Image (tube, rainbow over the protein chains, first blue to last red):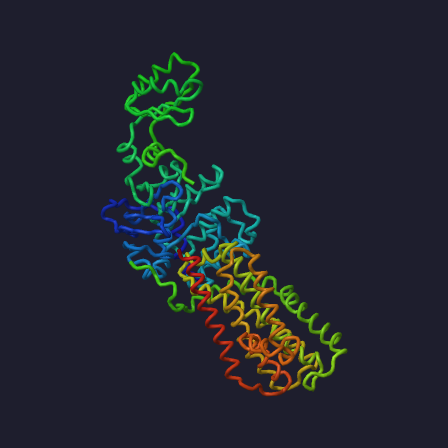
Length: 327
Length: 262
């Protein structure tokens, strides 16, 4: 018990870490040339990426891009038609079960055990990893503290808010002290306060040296948390790099969004002032290296409202994956 | 990387134990109402039909109707309990609560989860069958030491119907599907397999069908033991129950793999 305590506590507290260059770190996850189909539909066509120890790597993509399929493949729950996966040094799916001993998962859909209290959820989940009850009980206070659920150990799951349930799911994913945590859209459906709290916790985990693979379609989430990210579309990675690199590589640095009566008619003028102009519904997006001429044109048109801002990851995403709806 | 063969034999291990313990812990929280619920229904049938209807009936094979009905009630109570748990409760955990998904993200494979559900449903039905057996003893409906051997038969009946039930659950789109299984399979089986009246009362064709069903072999074992006789063809009856359990479990594992691992 004392040994478990001493093993557990420091890892949940912030600690100073030596900065190591990413290229000398070993990869904890390598995915090479995965192909996966469902009946006639090709879901993945040649997916490759690797995640280095201690980084937060994001997989961004519209609905149906293959994010969840990739996650299920990496966990060894399903098998691809071809390709290789190496998870924590073990081949997947052949040795997936062994690899999962040091993996945590925060699934997209809430699957906490509704028949148990908060603490029981952690205790029972620990048993699935073969952990002794005493060892898990010793970890529970620190895990609940980390999840902002101290004092809630005996609460029933039904009494928790959506944000609390997500945080408990996050705590549950840490019960086995994982090296790598898979997170499938961890903040979907949460209010801003709850979302920011989850983000803080994820940053803390990365600070402690945990590796995170984050599936998301929230650009601000990816921009904030991910050291590197890959943009997926139609089962393939179409861009990979740090958020800044992706913005610099794929998009003009300034954006002017214009809307209001006559905005669409004004788009023809805009096309002579900015190298790239897109019209979506009633809004005109001007992408440019220098927005001064666009802004000057808008000066004399009070009926048009506009927003001048720096390009962000969402602009890159929409440029690369298109604006049409994905259902 | 090759696609895993969903038809491969189940690969099970002791990792099923924590999953079984999970179900046990949930049950323990509600144990008293659960036991009472499991006991009340079959008891009402056994006492109501046994003493009520039984008072109008002559003896059956030299014993009172209620003594005849006791064996049927032990078997059918076990069958019902195993079936209910492997249908409704397992479906809730798999589909509604997504408990299986959470478990399979840990180092526990689907085959172990299905084994845990099998053993759990059999465990729960063992308690149901045993509870009726205790009442049968308490009422003096069975006084032979041979009736102790029924304790060994009840788990076999439980495993058999839990396995078949899980295979049904693996195909279910929703709870409604289970109604068909109860009305089209379980209830007719109760009528055909010597639960309420001797199978010899049936037309010969029906008897032939009945001998293909597992519940007939359960009552063929339990009834003589309760009445103090050694059953005939013990090996055949046990073999049929084991075969149904094994085939049901294999079918369940294959169907669950096809449903969940894609």
